[in-house]
Length: 468
Picture (spheres, rainbow, N blue to C red):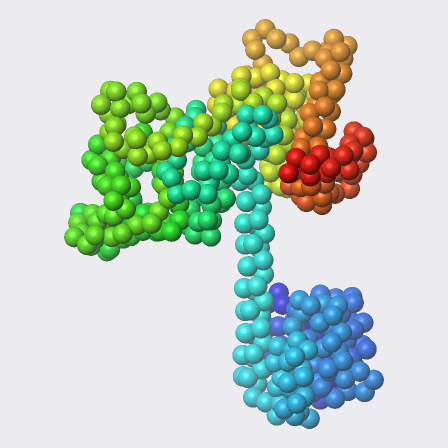
């Protein structure tokens, strides 16, 4: 049985019965109403996907009912069925938002087909909405987080580099967010509306990596049963991100050098030269200069890739960003697990700030994800964090011995939060709504914090304007 529900509206019992039989035959659930007024009462109480209404009815005709439905329940489709139709009336109905306009007598199959089509369109529309929401959520959590001095310099560098076509090499330890930097370079560039394609160079053996990058012709090797375009072709006019570039073999290095230098290549097993317009961004946690000295990485390719170097700082060098990262991941994993874990105790946050984070942001992210999944509280406590985060021999402090530390931490967190909000307000020229959206805070909560921290928004706007 369908989960869709239909409301039939007609002042004729015979017409209601005729449509009811047709709907029952198709397994559609329905209710009936003998007037427009009765229909509105039913709509107020129930959930409907479609209204099938007669045109000529006393008190409220079909066009008037259509107008009310579209004003109050725009997601509900309306189909008008009448024996008293005319072309001008049909045109008016469509203009007012009716899905279709059928004349009696009609063929049952015509009504069945029309209703099926309406439900199909509604399902597609619903799926598209869900996909947009999912995409919006995923993009919300793709952004680089942090307002420390080192990160502000990084943002400025990204803004400058993004506007060029120069190849960029992102270097840094594992887990520092090199892919996010690459994505930011793409999203802020003139190529932002075109593809961003990532290839993990360490994940594939030489032959498969060559095919992945440049594609192959049918029969190029065993298993190549059809032509396959490579990532260079798929990323045309966009950005190709080559992660772990230090892992590629000498043979692939040669072909990659030509593709970057000459902006052309051939598919594996092919003769046709293919032009490419692709911006190259690479990343590595290796010291490529040392690899060049050892002879494992081509010097000419190194210089082609290293036109601009962007350093992804380790988390231990930006500990002031840990609170904002923690709340960012709390929001993300609370949403993913359908839980409401919105805070963290001062003791737990102090532990996270003091940890050295050899695995960088990825390690912090995993810690918060685990804690959110396992906690039964709406705020993370020290006991929710892995025991391994504590140094050997360090005991969890009692409330009495920790009170001074906690007080100091609260002051530090308050000072950090105030500074963070002030910077965000300055960036958006004092616009409360845009600032709240940017820092993932409800507008009302932001206004409360502005009041609590006695932030002078007017002064921030004046300073921002004078700086310009």
